[in-house]
Image (tube, rainbow, N blue to C red; front, side):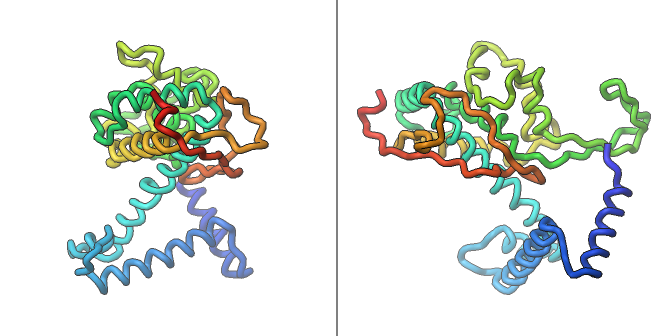
Length: 284
């Protein structure tokens, strides 16, 4: 459950201390810098509505909606469509670099399908789907809380009975790293998605990185296409190996690196790999 009054009090105290001392927390400094940058971008978009290369802000400004609404919508598009996808790709490549057997199998499967670029062909490759789904689950990039309001009459949630109107929240990352649903959740294990190919995998019930129902992320299919394409085209050109000196074995289940979590997860260490040019003879 959330405590909006406590959160409001915290922000008030933080802003008061900042104004009195001139200091501010790292998160506050980053937020102010981001807000300043977005305002500058909005002003530029409003001044150049007919630019030949419009961005989302130009489109929103051209729709004649209030500037602050356009700004809020554009800011909402930034984090889900950038950091979360890129950090997932980085983690996935890092993981398969230390599992050469799976990487070779994956590259062979994609090559057998002639390195497709359309969505229907990409998602028809079981090993690629397993690679990406496990990468999304393992990374758990979207760590922000997803608030919901309990309907009138209350509800029963795991033995608790929050009254109607109560705000409750949870993070998708909690489900994706739940030991009961996903044994050894800290390990990158794409095989867990390949064990029941002929029927719906029961893991899908707990796999909610994009939420479910009417609140499902609007960009979910775009995310999958980006990751399918990125992984497959990188493997087409390169063999990915662990960075020399990182003591990883050739066929090792990568363990989730330490990271910081706020709206999205960010690794606290460099996820370094070595890329070797892949020749056509490397893949059947």
